[in-house]
Length: 383
Image (cartoon, rainbow, N blue to C red; front, top):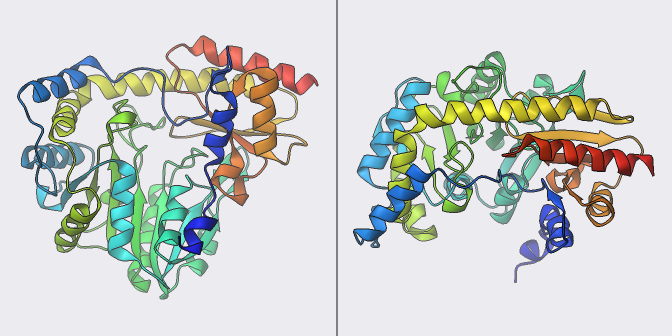
């Protein structure tokens, strides 16, 4: 085994979950998914596909009709894109890995805005790249990016800049002006931007729209790759279906890498994706409204607790908070599970920049569960 792989840290979120799974009555908010099943109209499309016997290989880049549908969906939210820029992948995480494989390798420098979902720093590290971390910081009740610090970190030596916005775990979201400035800087340095925008529809500052995207400001042949997933906006976490928007000049390489990674996404899963996109306008806005109610139920309750600092998320499905005096988030999260039946993700899972913080996924079908969770946290704070 390569030493680098041996040294990769195991998932701290999974470590907390393993401490709680099987315990009766635990309120689990640790994973990045809701507790509702995928909508029936999406599941029915997969069932119908299987009934037709669609169990064979597909094109590496995805079904032509799904690529066209993704292009149409993206074009309703952002400037038009062609299907010739779309690659269908077996999950959003596969999309991100394929993008990184296409752009970075051993000895390259990759800058990543952190704290962030750990896969985004692990992927370039697995490929032998040097990861440079650019930290968000909590200021005035929100997480913020120091643009000057980012510009200093991204130089002509930087092969790739990875940005996840809306951000997991903090809920931080780039502004349009920040995107314009970052893109202009990366054009000067020749740096590729890999934008993880899987939470773009789970955005609370727009009515039925989406968070600011690099697709709104870049040209088709800019060095910009945008990764997406069906997981969050369509409640399809277990289906493992995503897509990339890339410059046309990169598409052939992406197709090769999909072949060497997964060959293709399953046809019946792609049929489910087609149904999801066809029903997006009727389903997604309602999901976002529900998540906004969940956020607005949980955040004030957390803010009212003594010694709790909460950063208000503009997007995503997470409340990110810290408790005064708690500096070991993994140990504290384990105690919350074993002693109080409350399952949260430790901030340390997202990097040293998030140590002392906890992530609470508020995507709950029953907002009353959030209130029950707050009462368990209140009980823990009394001890």
